[in-house]
Amino acid sequence: MKNALSAVSLALLAASSAQAVDFVNGMTLSGGLLDLSGGSSANNGRVGYFSDIYYDPNRNEWWGLSDRGPGGGTLAYDTRVQRFTLDIDAATGAISNFQIQQTLVFKSGAATLNGLAPNPGNTLGLAFDPEGFVVLPRNGHLLVSDEYGPSVREFDRNGQLVRTYTTPANLIPRNAASGTPNFAGDTGNTAGKRTNRGFEGLAVSPDGKYAYAMLQSAMLDEGGGNGSINRIVKFDTATGEAVAQYAYQMKRSGQGQGISALVAINDHEFYVLERNNRGIGVGATLATADKEVYLIDLSGATDVSAIDLDSGAAFTPVAKSAQILDLDANTLAQLGGKSPEKWEGLAIGPRLANGSYLLLAGTDNDYSVTQNAGGEQFDVYFRFSDADPYATSIQCPLGLTSGCSGAATSVPVDGSYQLLPGVLHAYTVSAGELGNYMQPVPEPGTIALLLAGLGGLGLKTRRSARRG
Image (cartoon, rainbow, N blue to C red; front, side, top):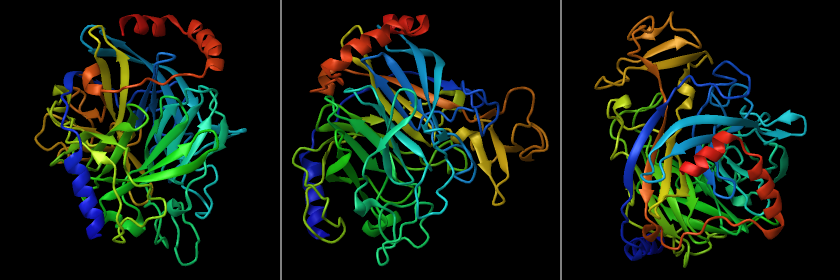
């Protein structure tokens, strides 16, 4: 590993210097908000917020991706994505008025892709834990990455599965001796991605020719929980085949460190959101939160498709800048000035009147639900003004505010306790700081359909376009 670490150090030293990104404002979104699916419970209707965020400039559409649902893969949940609108102040970039416009459930034929863990574990089937989301500019399809496979799946605009990309064999969670995979957990696996650490980040090149899916952290056979180097896989969107893999050096191992978002700036530069598992969240540890965004560059990085990253073989990882954004630096009064645990969504938004761009970050609130060893679920209520909200949290049977445990047996009616909200932060980043930023460009054949689609958007979306 000596040669590999030397290459990592050189790449870090050669990377570009930090860039300034300015905080504008933030907002909290009710932990009990329901989507438009018609469901009325945490397990079917409650918004899980932002495992990823994507802005499609060609259609002026915002998308917010939810994951496999409450229950950690033990309960049935129709996986889905929300299309939403925001009011954006064109002069400042300030955001307000979050509204869900569409809830789209992922389907394969008549069946839905479900958040239940694969069963049997050696077959992925329709099990789906969505974590990354982009819109393919060449056809408008939705591309979604998943943790179970890890997989990348393409859907049409109705949420119907079109195809599944081919996952590289070295990433499949498996027993290396027998070759038998276990997609449901780590039991028996000695190689491939770790459970719940699959394709967390997803980006698409501006021309739509390539998609980039990023593992959350190191694979089982490359350090596992003690590893600090993970992989970015480059896929050809025409064939669905992987064409390269690149190594990414994280800040640390331990503390649940991993990446949560990947955002394309052009065809070789990306933003990476990297975080630990500390902060305000369901079952997390409060101190010390550490959530950062870095600029990376794939130019000059070694294709490590055939390289074991902890074998000692020499390779050049992706170049990584110093931190460009500290997501913990600006907190909201509604959370008592504390940082959320799961910053997972990051997107470059529309251009503002002064030529800068909106940068939007969002959190996954885990539906504000936890469960015990027996599978019984509980809503988790916090009083964020407390020094340690975990010490005074209240856990109530799902959908109820009485019969609770923790700091009290019922939720006070004075509003001092709340379900964990979703959080959005708005930042501005100048065109100069973004460098060679390129927005996704649709193929000529899709432009007429695109214009027709834009003409059919509702008044709410058009108003956001005028203001943003």
